[in-house]
Image (cartoon, rainbow, N blue to C red):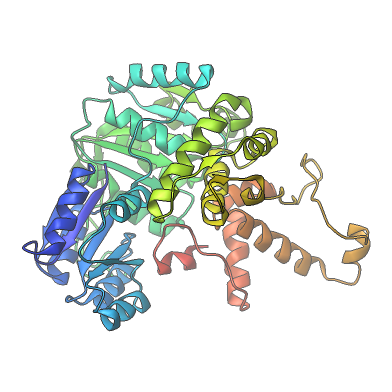
Length: 456
């Protein structure tokens, strides 16, 4: 259930947008102006902000950047408000919502910020059994560890567990632990008091407090620094957290779900993850199989994504042709459901005629890896032997191009790129800092506001 903050008067079309979002399952909060909206975000957080262009969208975005609040802002206004829309986008607004609002466009925005709100699309027998197990444990209060490769749908399953739990009326709050550097991650998790660091101009609740009475998903928890692991363990055991700069602990009532693409038992054995935290998180363990092991789900998911993105882009709904289906079934899907979703999104945009044909199915080749033990070798459409083509280039240049190309292939997803490259997310982040400082263009983190680009 997405949390949407609406800034502006609800008496006209912006109110209609709020009602449409609420009808789609969003939890709506309101504020009369940008300053009041900022105060609401500090206190309660949100997944999405709809802000009337009559208010100072640029000031709001700048304040969010300065106070390290990661929340996309959508500017809302009439089509004849073109100048205000351009100013808002240039100031950092993620998108522009024309008024009167389109219901399908709002639905697409909610899906983009909060994931798929419906029941997971499942036809494969193994996945059906997993979903039944997830629904069984959803009614309990125990922590659940979701395991699986990047892109298998761990957050989708986490949202489904929340929706089937006794906490369904409470908030669902998700945080990707790999997407933020350690200092910012700590503030996002535990919040801070005024003056706790440069830019902390007011107190702010973190994700634990925002999820009060609901569910908190710690995505990619295997990438978390050991110091923060200790703080998470204390929060789970004592059911209280310490804000940065705070003088007293804050009680919290939150159910913890955690997700990882790593084998945490192996990470524990190697001394990279706390054993006591692992046992706290893994009261129930659910492994989501990769798409290549649940081939019965490929075509149902493909049809689902084709319908969704046709509606979101205002295009006619087209069936997936048998020839296109054959291509989809033959592909190994190293990027799992996320790769399939991106493929069908492209196909919807490229398709012509009455069906999505094979010519619209643009399958990405597997990216090369840094280590010899990687299984997939890159396909290089050139008559020049790969190693010979690299002679004369410096090793650091080749490494830079490889990392940036892999990141582009993963659409900016740092976790997936690090996994494909065989390096840690921390190493990747440090490399990206070096490249950006040298003037290279680095793909941004998907779904994050502009300041998140500096996080690598």
